[in-house]
Amino acid sequence: MSDLLLTIDESGAKGYSDQTERQPGEVGVMVGFVIPVEETPRVKSELKLVQEGFFASGKLHITDLNKEEQEQLRAGIFDYFQQTKIPWLFEAVYVQGFFENAESIKKRSETIRKERRSHIKVAHHPYKESLHSELFLGVFGKAVAFGTEVLKENKFQLQVLTDPVDKKILKMFEEEARKLLNVGLFIEPVKKPTLRIQVIRFSELS
Image (cartoon, rainbow, N blue to C red; front, side):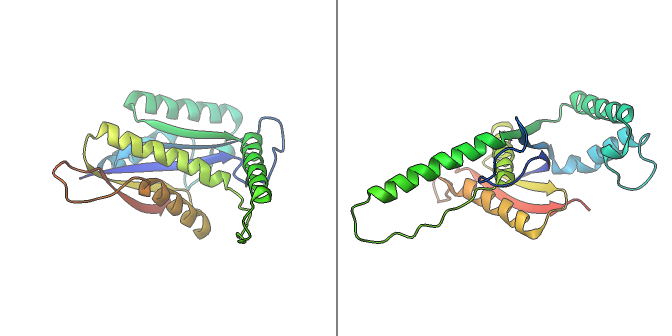
């Protein structure tokens, strides 16, 4: 069985489906890259060399650098990933589109409820979709597809590495991953191997 590591980070909006955009074209983005778990020490070491000339010590953010240094660091990181051909995955969602889609579903649901002829009461609890969760689901799903396509194996484990997030967000990610993998995924004793994806070990950067 092969082990893959998906490292993710998000930028921009990550609110809920009842929120409109704060400025035209506001978007939420999540990006990740996938490597074999055994390659982690090497990749981590090589990326550390790329940023060594910019950060003297400690864990700092790119925004702590001036604009010229930011561009130089970005160029160095992009060049590294191009040379190593490490696959990148991303999901981007417009805030306004996310809101309008949720409103459309909400209106259809309300119309259906009003047109019901049954006397049986049906509980109605409006639910707000999380943009953060939607972004994760998109990247995670692509990582699963990547593993099934590239590894050509009937079983693999996908580990997910994130920046520190609160427990509520981590639980939400886990639920989205399980929902995705539980759709049409089953294991039974058949002669032809059934696809098995062992997920997940979620962890945070220390």
